[in-house]
Image: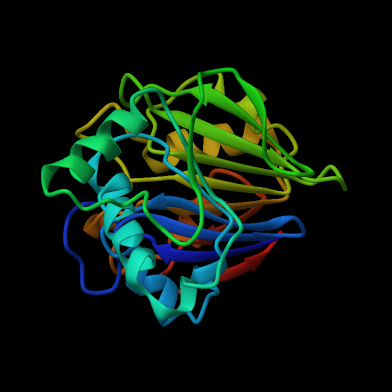
Length: 254
């Protein structure tokens, strides 16, 4: 697996950090993990094979995580690069995902599902096991962020584990869910003294890392209070494992 950070930021505009989106390349296909408003153009900027993207994961319905989804479908509808595609694009997310996409689709008769290739929307529940791609198994965990927010755990045929918390407050359930992951992609919105309990600050994130013992941690969803701070150095004071600060364009081997 190889992870590319498309957006390491939040909903708040930032000159170096786009809104949350991540590209994951696996032996079974490619995934877009969340679709922030910048996702389509960030994939192109990173020279990724977006016309042949296999699946999309939407963790929850805050606009910085989902608002790029329908513009991407609008783009694939008209892009010359997708007109010969026949393989389905599968979009996974919480309950009501189809309702939200339909609301945008119907608002101006965009006909987003009338594409050269099929689009399938799959709604999943907390604590559900399913197959995201053939040979790539997935599990979900309800997180304390929104009513629908879900963390995602992926396992390939080599039993490598990748875990993406997306936005979450602290929960004792996070560490068992991420136990022994090869890579844990975890939000860390705040350095300290968080003003929103439904996010993590560094001490929270390092507690999860300590208890789950992943090979690598990448901290993302970073507000501007992290600007100019050596995140990795501060993380080492709390946990001795490898912590990497997400930056737009960062590529990490799993």
